[in-house]
Image 1 (tube, rainbow, N blue to C red):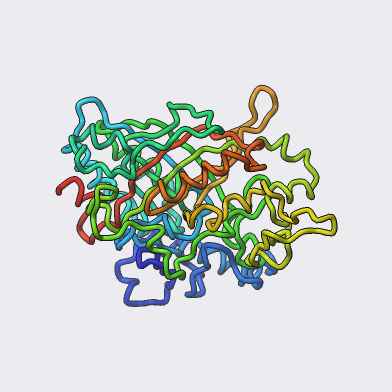
Image 2: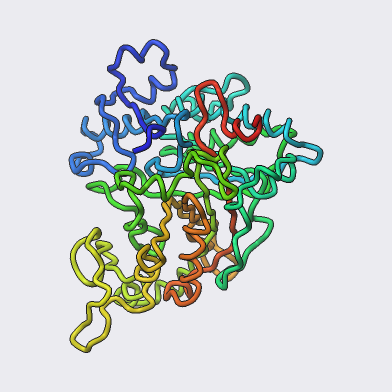
Length: 427
């Protein structure tokens, strides 16, 4: 795990207690000293009764989990997926330029550092999260293609930030796509996440205005008997083949190297590119399929995420295996087959989505689906080739509609005393 993602939830560490806020003490009261993992809890937690000490300790330790703001990479990339999320894009106000953007990124970075440590705002705090600890809060900041012309920094715009090509499955709403600036907020407590959203919006002041905002959720940590890959609103395990930080080529695939180039200038060292897509799931149509039909669309067992060719979730998919009739066990147009890195020239991306549900439309159809977020060192070698292939014959495509899209350059993490984007804005 990258050094930006380290956490602490140990209230018995007296060396750290002197500077801890009252709100963080409240959030960590009763914790065992070992923070609950952000992707799930142990079986002892899951089977404990609601009044047992074990369950009370696990619940209170959830608020103690802290994500570090400073580091080589920004938080919110390799941070374990949180239960609550907000995605918000801003456009710089008329007349605002590089000077105003610099001041804004300074404000946002200072706010992020305080809130991620479980501290209140220095002034005008809403008290929404007064009683909670950090709750794995992370804030991540990125720049859109239009930001560079608005600030006179066109020569520093990465080639990797060129607009994404059109895809057959696109039904994009331009008003809910792109933007000068992008902020990703995640936390394991809904009020903590909302508190951060309000703080960021207020910090924008007259320098920038909200272009669009989207709200999402995931399974809460500790909701399953053991840590598990999350499920999406189709009921499918989602994220099985994600690259892992333990893999030797993880950094090369996900993060921009320190050597600058026209594709990714030096100021992007340690950064990554985020593709953001609002993908509506046509759940009424999907849910009419039998479980067997759904599994054939995906290429995996719905219950376990295992390949249809056998084994468990992490087993290798045997693409050439046939059944007694000579038919491929994993259909030729199965989503898991088409999206595999080895079927796309090694293209890899780190998927880190949130689900969304924005109500029921006039026809009684749920406006629900996936806030798809993927991270890669170069979207032209990550997202684009995979999406092009999915566009041409993915069995899942008929149950999806891509309604909004954005691509953002997310620079490396801020140094202590610095702010996100400093190398760009002061370079």
